[in-house]
Image (cartoon, rainbow, N blue to C red; front, side, top):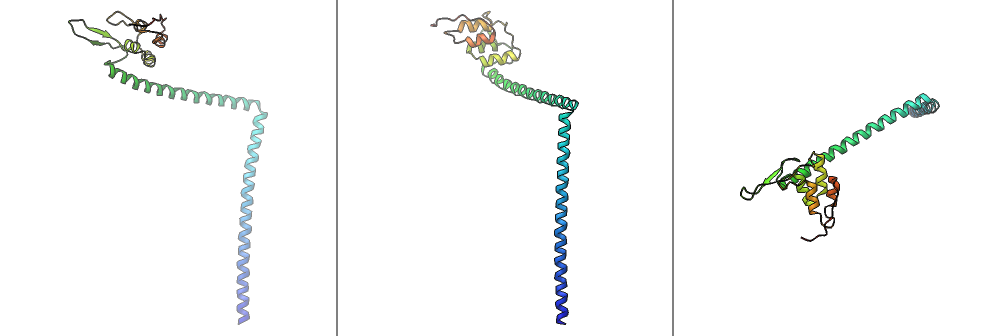
Length: 187
């Protein structure tokens, strides 16, 4: 009986070893199959690339598609930049309007009393007086009219020219497209 048991255990061990060997061989075969599939895919990709280089029609189509894609990307970037600029412009101008009592780019602000006369000025005139080139450029983009006259019958460029001491308002005059006459200074 002892011999019989030893034979049974030996057989069981041999079966287990054979199963392990079979599982190992199956895993290796599956791995080889997977590698073969990857190699086939790489080969197909290389064949397509060679064909694309050799086929002028394919190259032209690909270049055309790439150019269209590049143009679309540029257009989207441009739109995003314009939207960002517009948000910034509205924020800055909103603060400017609130600070100086204006309602919009061409809306006047009236001040003073009736006895000494009512004064009228516009956002462009106020920004010109302050020498704020950035605000002037934003106002112009928002449609501010350069030719509007304040209650002293001056345009924004004339206000800037009058305030221009030693080149202090040169940037404003350039932004408004006006020629400058620099004053020597003093009061």
